[in-house]
Figure 1: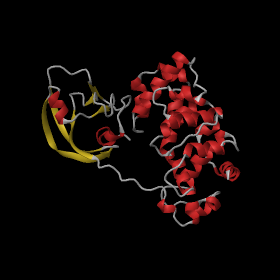
Figure 2: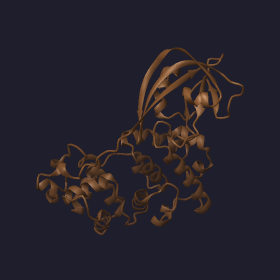
Figure 3: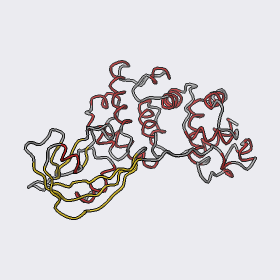
Figure 4: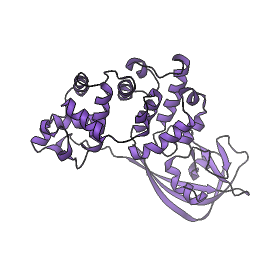
Amino acid sequence: MTGKLVDWFLCNRRELPFRNSSNPYYILVSETMAQQTRMAALIPYFERFIDSFPTVASLAEADEAEVLSLWAGLGYYSRARNLHKAAREMCARHNGAVPDSEKTLRALPGVGEYTAGAVASIAFNLPCPAVDGNVRRVYARLFASDGGDVAGWVRSLMEDAPPRLVTESLMELGALICTPSAPKCGQCPVSEVCRAFLEGKVTQFPAKKQKPVKREKHRIVCVARDEKARVLLRRRTERLLHNMWEFPTEERLLADGFAVTRESGPLGTAKHVFTHIVWHMTAYEASVTYDRLPEHYQWAASPRGFALPSAMRAWICLIFAEK
């Protein structure tokens, strides 16, 4: 099986910017970005990030605000913060190099079992399994089972082929062929040994998990301008989107000592879905008065240079006429 899988990968793999280099730092950045993100969305972010921070040292020396600004729109911002912290730790403890052992990688901020295995196997060709959703799905269908030692199975494949090729082959198979819906079993290089395919049960594996109910939150977003037509922004102190900038809510402005007057009817509505919560937002033009501008607020002529999350994208386009 391993030989057929690797041969298929070598003939069908996608051309991705981080595949053209064995640089462990590039692999670490790409694997961190790939968590919860589609590859098509990831690529331009990866290229901009590496252009700005081509080395571990350059990332370590950057301000968090600069890192978050480049990550803005990609979501799951704890990934960016942890990657930034990891770069600083690599400079402090590993001479600015990505560690070449799974155990040491696991000790870095934000690096879990999957990311450590991916970097160790792809960058250093070590027999360390990287088990993500794609690999679990491939395993579940091959063995028609929702249980089992997935990591042990991957490690056994690495006895027959270079670990980096096994890791990337399994990832690619799950991304291109053994997809969650409408898998392309007719193009699968290992369908002849896939129990779910042979038994006509492909859609039954892996078993679908019930999604948790998301909390709903309604937010009144205030678009406040000063005499120079600048817009008021607030840097969030909450855990969600911490240190990211937003157009402040009416509730937050009042809590921070502003007097707020809505100047018009609604400018528009937007919805943003997070992992555990859904924001329903309605924006209003508003005027504000205050005794002293709190330090986490700022008047902005342009969104450039501010780490504005994708949840604010509708208002960025509306207010600044920029995409």
